Image 1 (cartoon, chains in turn brown, green):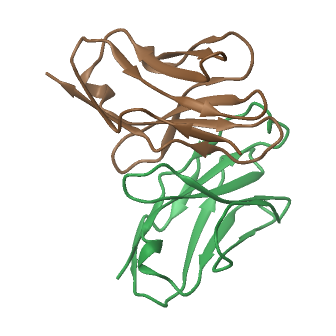
Image 2 (cartoon, each protein chain N blue to C red):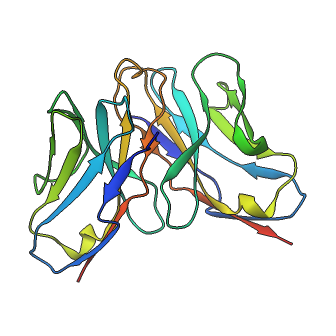
Image 3 (cartoon, rainbow over the protein chains, first blue to last red):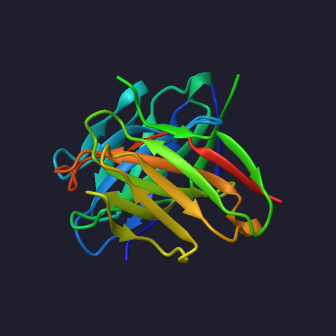
Length: 113
Length: 115
């Protein structure tokens, strides 16, 4: 069975600082990995996805993530945080043969002025 | 181009009642998935519909049922509501043929409160 863990339920950074949100997955087959963002009272919006092409994936709003098979990780980064980045971030895994996504518990990002 | 739309946005029910939530997928999408997101948690997969049939189901009891219509819209029904059913219910759509690599497109959800 697949699973996703996200270290740190709440991360706080200062505006302009590096953002690092951690995601580790467990999968019996090479996975497809996704990061979604959820703003208050809204649905989930795709930030980026890894589907076995380049291991460094660039997404929207300046975010990127690197797939590291040896570490079973897919951490999300952004060089410089902006106030508008404050939201809940979810990592998700989908196996190539399944239909559903398995989401992590989420990390709430706060950006301090 | 309208995205995924859900209704109602908010509703309050009492224990034992039944609820129906509705979803219209993004234009061009024929596959609809439903997720339950409890407060402070990630979304949990309920089931997926394609060609008007349930294609896959998560670990949810039979009280949770669904339907997909010929126009690809979908309903989620929950019977005999429990307090623990209080959550944000998210509908997500995707086009068939992208099962391996495609992402899900989410609506803004229906927030159900059970008293």
